Length: 426
Image (tube, rainbow, N blue to C red):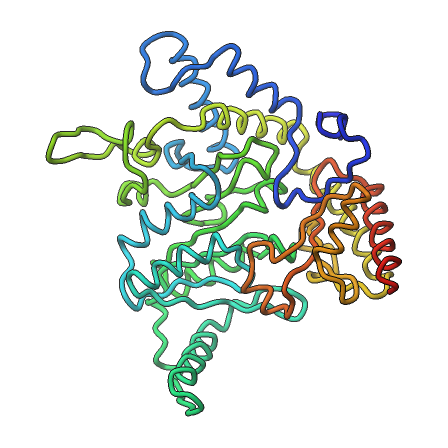
């Protein structure tokens, strides 16, 4: 598999274990971007000439590929953005800001990436929504069935903070499930590797309140598994191209058509209008309404090539390889001393994402020693500071695998960890 990725030919000693941050690109994707620039480069949705029509067809062909890839009901339900972050912001400020009001509840989890926390914190400040965070267990799984008790604990804590040491109780009966208007949840944790059981969680919350909307951050899951938005029953789904072998600067927001029709645009400018006068503008239909200005055309076309590549490999093979690597890595973590692993200890319902620390060594020091051995990992809080607080650490080292990794890569990681122990005399 590595032979399909030019970077590994240029750096044969590299052990790349940072795919949760960004994936490497196969030659097929690089060639697709280069081919666009050398044979088809023109702006889209504007020109009446052949070259522009070709570029437009290629761009829209990727939209169709994405719709089929996630089994969207309609191709117009696929909106191109700059990445998962913009996709979530579009849902937050295009839909939630318009339809939520003071006191409405958005349910998150303790394992969310900042991209799925900060927009909701902003709306809390702007319109007064309430946030409730689902906690995690000691084995790093999500607890989601006791939402009323989480609400009570949150308000007891808030009142204690407001009243100093004076403790004030809150009645369980004060919780109104109809106030839960949105569940915004990661499908898979970028820190823990935990895959949340959406097929159980979404129906649970829909039963509490049939009107609840569900937004899924699928940045980590879409590259590794087949996603069917109709089967999941989610209302919004956000993911990025660069984590699934495609170019950077491209993302997708899937949203049900009826929601897109009612939403406000997030970015204003050209293309997204029907008519403009000196006094007023009216918006185009989705998806154009949400794609103002010149898009990342070559990036979108590269995403289409990435989807083709993933489908040619098949998710069955990708998941089988990942299961073997994850099991192999977990066995090694379990057999080594002075290593703390933050994440599920078995390979079921988890990705090949391994956050760890070695003794009391700072994560940055561990990463630097590994870097000297040509092992690329990430160190720090991984854009998940609330989760770091729950874990009781300032940061971790994260090694994350993908379809091009091998058991030899895992072996070299642990050789590097032994070097860390030697340097710090652990």
